[in-house]
Amino acid sequence: MIKKIGFVGLGTVGRHMAANLTKSDYDLTVYDPDAEAVADLVKRGATAGVSPFHTAKGQDMVIVILPECLGGVDSLIFGEGGVLQGIDPGTIFVDMGTHSLDTTKKLAEAAIERRVMFLEAPVWGTKEHAANGLLTIVASGDASLLGRCRETFSYFGLNIIHIGGNVGDATRMKFVVNMVQAELIQALSEGIIFGEKMGFKADKILEVLDSGGVACPLFHSKGRSIARGDFSRNLALKYVHDQLKQVIETARAVDLDLPAAETVCRQYQQAVLDGRGEEDYSAVVKVLRR
Image (tube, rainbow, N blue to C red; front, side):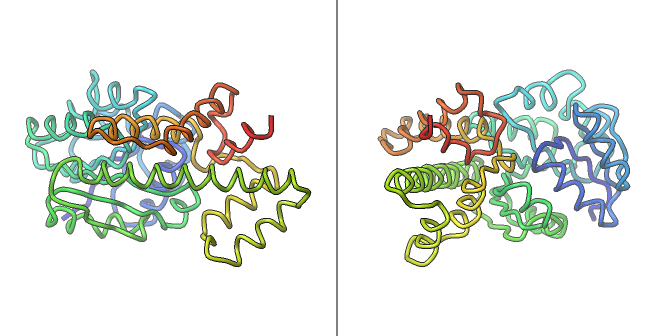
């Protein structure tokens, strides 16, 4: 039975996931280099972990959600005093970040060496989804292990989908999600800018798009924020760029050409070079407005 949980990674999405876990009866210990994020969780009832090692030690489950592009995986999981040095045999180790296939396989292999039960379960959604318990969780690994985790995941996830039993299955599916999501935002951005250049207001463009066959929740929410000029961070643009690079690398490894993804990746790269990396990923529209 899961009673004690260690949680490492209180970024844009992770802090809201952990906040929802404070509403449960779990004994929750949290860690992040951001002391302010940790202090906020402590106010909500969590215990502050001294280090990743301390946060992982003696737990029934350890949840980690860290960005690969900033080196957090190497330092906080594999590094000296990291999660893998502290985690006990028999603990459920859940990786909920989005990583490269190589990193995912490395995590799985390290878990086996430590006699730890590993579950690959990257999350999909924004900070609003996380705050409201509406994230989608794509998981791969032992289906019975996922079953043991479902109650915990229900505090921050609405959809929990088992992708397959092999290491890397969930990561590969997340690549599909990341690619489609980024391309949809690029298409929306081009539609708004093109329409504005022809004399239409953004609100009118969105009204028409919302009424027909291309209507979707992403267009509705992001279109309105773009029209308002609101690019406050829900999902950082720099992370989307990093995810697109992983998509293209994976496609090339299977001898597949993804021309749209490569073009969109260049747009996100330009946005990062323009200093937009910390903004919401919808800020890619600004590349078109230069």
